[in-house]
Length: 89
Image (cartoon, rainbow, N blue to C red):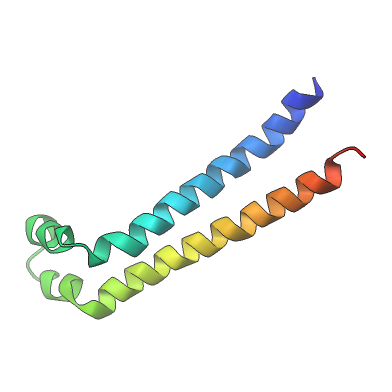
Protein backbone atom coordinates (compact mmCIF):
# COMPACT_ATOMS: atom_id res chain seq x y z
CA UNK A 1 0.00 0.00 0.00
CA UNK A 2 2.98 2.32 0.38
CA UNK A 3 3.41 2.62 -3.40
CA UNK A 4 -0.21 3.82 -3.71
CA UNK A 5 0.35 6.58 -1.16
CA UNK A 6 3.50 7.71 -2.94
CA UNK A 7 1.78 7.58 -6.32
CA UNK A 8 -1.09 9.71 -5.00
CA UNK A 9 1.47 12.24 -3.77
CA UNK A 10 3.64 12.31 -6.90
CA UNK A 11 1.15 11.92 -9.76
CA UNK A 12 -0.64 15.31 -9.48
CA UNK A 13 2.69 17.13 -9.33
CA UNK A 14 4.02 15.15 -12.27
CA UNK A 15 0.91 15.97 -14.31
CA UNK A 16 1.37 19.65 -13.44
CA UNK A 17 5.02 19.51 -14.56
CA UNK A 18 3.97 17.94 -17.87
CA UNK A 19 1.29 20.59 -18.34
CA UNK A 20 3.79 23.39 -17.71
CA UNK A 21 6.29 21.87 -20.14
CA UNK A 22 3.68 21.47 -22.86
CA UNK A 23 2.14 24.90 -22.35
CA UNK A 24 5.56 26.52 -22.15
CA UNK A 25 6.76 24.97 -25.39
CA UNK A 26 3.51 25.84 -27.12
CA UNK A 27 3.58 29.46 -25.94
CA UNK A 28 7.25 29.86 -26.87
CA UNK A 29 6.97 28.38 -30.35
CA UNK A 30 3.53 29.15 -31.78
CA UNK A 31 3.76 32.98 -31.95
CA UNK A 32 6.80 32.74 -34.24
CA UNK A 33 5.36 30.15 -36.63
CA UNK A 34 3.79 31.07 -39.96
CA UNK A 35 0.46 29.74 -38.74
CA UNK A 36 0.26 32.54 -36.17
CA UNK A 37 -0.69 35.11 -38.80
CA UNK A 38 -3.33 32.74 -40.18
CA UNK A 39 -4.78 32.22 -36.69
CA UNK A 40 -4.82 35.94 -36.01
CA UNK A 41 -6.51 36.66 -39.35
CA UNK A 42 -9.17 33.99 -38.82
CA UNK A 43 -10.07 34.42 -35.18
CA UNK A 44 -9.01 37.82 -33.89
CA UNK A 45 -11.27 40.84 -33.71
CA UNK A 46 -10.35 43.42 -36.37
CA UNK A 47 -9.18 45.94 -33.78
CA UNK A 48 -6.82 43.40 -32.18
CA UNK A 49 -5.09 42.14 -35.34
CA UNK A 50 -2.33 44.78 -35.54
CA UNK A 51 -1.47 44.23 -31.88
CA UNK A 52 -1.40 40.43 -32.15
CA UNK A 53 0.84 40.65 -35.20
CA UNK A 54 3.38 42.86 -33.46
CA UNK A 55 6.68 41.41 -32.31
CA UNK A 56 6.17 42.92 -28.86
CA UNK A 57 3.00 40.93 -28.19
CA UNK A 58 4.57 37.80 -29.65
CA UNK A 59 7.52 38.26 -27.29
CA UNK A 60 5.16 38.73 -24.33
CA UNK A 61 3.42 35.46 -25.17
CA UNK A 62 6.79 33.76 -25.56
CA UNK A 63 7.90 35.18 -22.21
CA UNK A 64 4.81 33.72 -20.59
CA UNK A 65 5.87 30.39 -22.08
CA UNK A 66 9.35 30.79 -20.58
CA UNK A 67 7.72 31.35 -17.18
CA UNK A 68 5.84 28.06 -17.63
CA UNK A 69 9.06 26.25 -18.57
CA UNK A 70 10.92 27.64 -15.56
CA UNK A 71 8.04 26.70 -13.29
CA UNK A 72 8.10 23.15 -14.68
CA UNK A 73 11.84 22.86 -14.09
CA UNK A 74 11.48 24.22 -10.56
CA UNK A 75 8.69 21.79 -9.66
CA UNK A 76 10.48 18.88 -11.29
CA UNK A 77 13.64 19.67 -9.33
CA UNK A 78 11.62 19.93 -6.12
CA UNK A 79 9.81 16.67 -6.87
CA UNK A 80 13.08 14.82 -7.52
CA UNK A 81 14.76 16.30 -4.46
CA UNK A 82 11.87 15.28 -2.21
CA UNK A 83 11.78 11.78 -3.67
CA UNK A 84 15.50 11.42 -2.83
CA UNK A 85 14.79 12.53 0.75
CA UNK A 86 12.06 9.89 1.10
CA UNK A 87 13.95 7.06 -0.64
CA UNK A 88 15.13 4.33 1.71
CA UNK A 89 18.81 3.78 2.29
